[in-house]
Length: 132
Image (tube, rainbow, N blue to C red; front, side, top):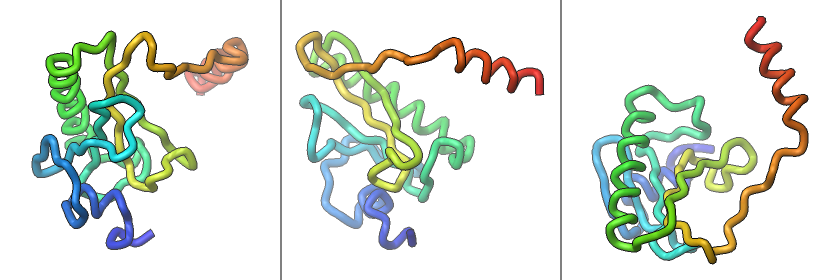
């Protein structure tokens, strides 16, 4: 996909209307237009990346700094039971532009984590990587 056609690039670089919460030279943080919970925000790098392993070190650090700052804001404004910071990669990145979701969590919100199916096999595969 060309960067000029990338929705994430357009949002991060303010080519489309957004509600920007925070911005610096590397990232733009916006309110999500379809939030799971009130206050859900997205962190988008201004440069085009698709997956976390594509990020350069400076941009990755700026994303972490922004996520911490947004978490503090959410805690102060929404008084949640917790904060979730999450990123979907590969085919699960429906924006086709790297982005991080930061949102307040509540005991009653219905967001669920799926438990692992086979931790033994995963441990074996990871142990094999360490030996390589």
